Length: 78
Image (cartoon, rainbow, N blue to C red; front, side, top):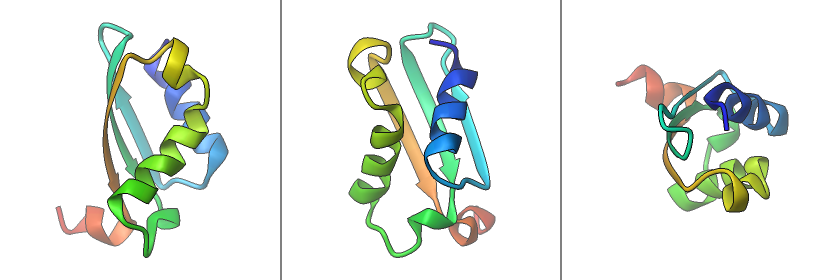
């Protein structure tokens, strides 16, 4: 699966300020997602939002996904 397709799926599920997905082998991916939708959510709930956006692709097309999920404020402090 093309990393750009994963970015589009995440962006279409909830509003994001930034989504960057890397995955040279197209099975193992690393995603950095910045969204105000993460405000007040613990890490596990942020990840669940992303998994929900990817749906069945998590079973069939994505073998592994490393996630870094930040609010805009958290990302700005990096």
